[in-house]
Image (tube, rainbow, N blue to C red):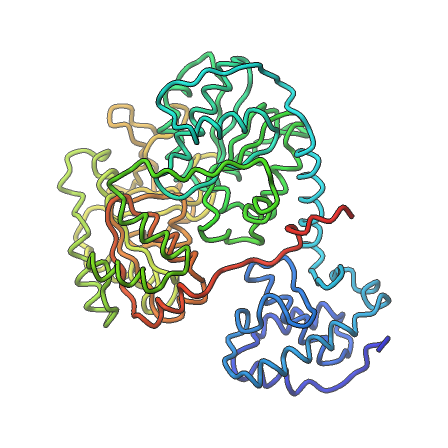
Length: 538
C-alpha cells in the first residue's frame, strides 16, 4: 500500500478505555502525523513508538514480531488482544512509504527499526564518535609501568589495558574493587605524566563524594591536576570546543543516558583516554538508552573484575548473583535461610517495623557524626508514588518524627553556584539550615571546625525528604543496611531493579514483598532496545 488512507479508530479507543494506551501517547502520535487522517494501524504504531521512547527505548523493531514486546510497553494480558495489536502495527509499519517519511521528519525508518528523530540522531552520533575514538591511539605514550602489591592480577591487567587504549571499560559487581582500580589507574597515569590533566566524573553528587574519599590524597597533592565533576557540571563548565583532559574516568557509567554519553564521546579530546566504570547488571539510566551495556557488548577493550575482595558481603554477593542469573529457586532458598524476606502486609505494619531501624541522629554530638549516622540505614522502594511509594512513606515517617530537630533530605535538581547536585544527601534542621558533607575547601558555607557545610534553607534547590528513596534514586549510593519494599507491579522494572537494590547494601538487607511479585521480577529483564549493538558502518 503506497498511500495512507483514512479509516476510523475504534481499536485505539478500546485500548485507551482499557487503560493500556495512555492519552499522552495517542496525542503525541496525532501530533506526529500532522493531524492528518491516517490509518488506525499507523496511528497505533506511532503511539507504541512514543510509549516505548518514554520507557527509554531508542527505537522499536518490527518484523515477524515486535520489539520491545507489546506486553512490556502496554500492560495487556489478553493474548487475543496482543495478537490484534501485533498484526495492526506490522500492517502500519508496511504502510510507511518513503513519501510519507519524507514529509514527516520527526520519524526515521532504518531497515526494520523505527525511531523518533531525536533518538536516531543520538544513536548515529554515538556510533560515529565511538568509532572515531576507538580507532585512535593515545597521544601520551609510555614504555613500562611498575605496580605495587596492593593490586590483584585482574586489577593490574585492567590498569594496563586502559593505559594502552583511548577508550576502555572496567566492569564488575559489588566488592570487586572498581573504584580502587580507578584510583590506581589515575596514580599510575600521573606518575607517568605528572603534568597531565585528569577529570573524574559521575552522574550524581553522591557518586562523586564516594570517589573523592578514595582520591583525597591525590587531589590534595598540589603538583597533580585532578578535577571531579558531576556530568551536569562538567558540561556546564565546558568553555572549549573539547574537554581538555588527558584522562577522563566516568564512574557509575551504567546510569549515563544517551544524551550525556554522546557529549562525552563528542567532546573528548582526540588522543586522550576515556575510561568507563560500571556494573552492566544494574538498572539502565532514567533517561533514554542503555548505552553502557550496548557499547560494552561490542567493545574489545574491556576488563571484567570478578574477584570479590570483601568477605563481609558474601551473602549480598550470593543473592545478587542469583538475581542476575534469574535463579528464582536459589534466590528464595537463600532468602528463607538467612531470614532476608518479609511478607508485605499492611502499610501500618510495615512502617512500625521500619521505624525500629531508623536511628535518632540527635544522639550524636556533632553534625558530622549525624550525617554519618543517617547513612547507616536507608529504606528503598520500587515506586515514587502510591501507597508504598517513597513520597507516601516519607510523609508518614516525617509526621511521626515531627518532634525531631532534623530530617534527612536529598537534592533533586542542580545548583552550580552552591555546588549542590541531584542526588546529594543532607540533613535539614529546625535552625533553618541544611547540613552536607564537604566536597572541597572551595565550596561555600563550609564549617571548617566540623567538616560540614551549613547551607541556608532559603537558598536550597529542590529537595525531598529522604527517609525512603526510590531504588532508581539510590544508584551511586551505599548503606550499611537497607530495607527494600517491592509492592505488586514492581515486576515491570525487571531483575535489574532487585539487583540494584540489593547491591546498595554494604552489610545487611531485608526485603518486603510477596513471592508472586518477586518471582515475576526475577523472571523479567529490563532491556532497552537500540541499533547500537549492530554498529553498521552507515
